[in-house]
Length: 88
Image (tube, rainbow, N blue to C red; front, side, top):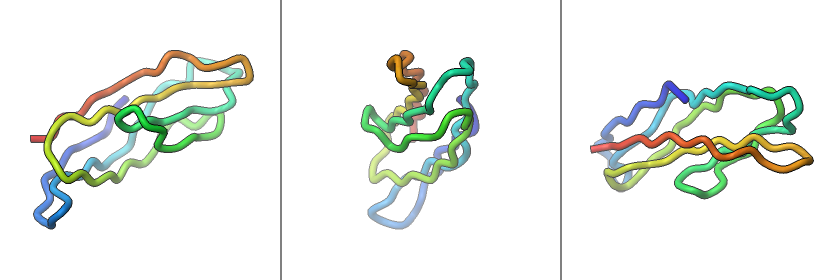
């Protein structure tokens, strides 16, 4: 994972934005795609061989936010890889 930045925002109700690119390695040649999670909830699903996702998320409060990436195919899913970002 790399490329995410937390920025304070002055407009209510949004106080923080995460922007940038969430990037990961594709270590398999037989995946169907990747599931991207935000705080444990499914955010989106990508196609196979996609290795980046543009992020532009707004949050009302400071704190830790977790993004997860899970490769999947017809045989099941790989363990979710997680990165946390803290806004203060």
